[in-house]
Image (cartoon, rainbow, N blue to C red; front, side, top):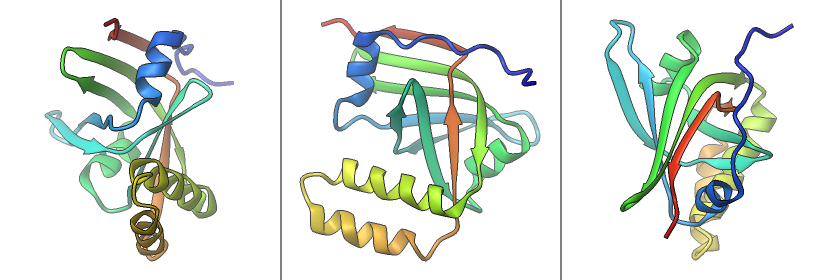
Length: 143
């Protein structure tokens, strides 16, 4: 039985915004001293869940491994979405490598050769995936 908060629905207009190319996530985590740490990251939206991935050893994934609470902002000028909740850690290397490969291909869709160079580089790294089924979603995405 999970004691995680129920996930908030992602409305169709928010989903379209999050799935649009060119948006990056600003991931806010808590450092051990309680201060906020922010980092820019790639993401995917999969079945109402925000998927994040990183090389192990970086500060923000280390923070999430210690304390899974997160706030994520995605913006495009005055249009924005914030998602808050608790992540689930996916420490399966095959899955983490598949996730980062999908992200590389998404973010470098205009240069597939570069995307594949990135995928090869990532294979040399130990990766971790985090899934956020947001407990809260706020947005201003209307034109």
